[in-house]
Length: 156
Image 1 (spheres, one colour):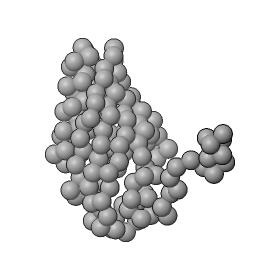
Image 2 (image 1 turned 90 degrees about the horizontal axis):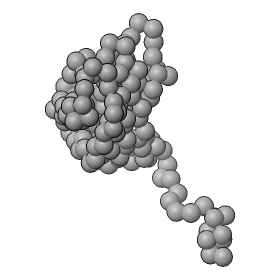
Image 3 (image 1 turned 180 degrees about the horizontal axis):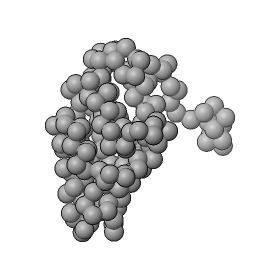
Image 4 (image 1 turned 180 degrees about the vertical axis):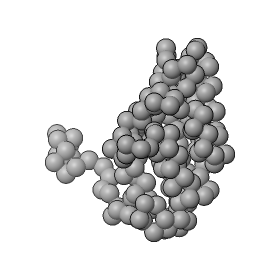
């Protein structure tokens, strides 16, 4: 498959699963033996990566029914596509034991997908979960700026 067809498949994945709210599309987009390195700690023997991904996505769509996901950048090389995304919404439902806060979120993340025969076979993700938890009030506000010890170094 070409880089352009893999990028198009990624766009369709994001559009259908998140923007249109149909996570079950992941069953079509992911290879049967796909691995999502972010979800591996939650994996149970009887569930495929697609089942786990659909379940997690449904949890987030219920917690943030007005969820908006925008693709801010997409780069492809050989069999991989990197997507830089931004997610916004309001937590009006519970999120994994965290009661609905009514607060808005605005977070970003990166995802790298490796393709085999037009399907996502492997995924690596990195996103601002800490920022999400802070924004919905599940964590105290985090201190911004340089740590005190670094301030003195910066002033020197």
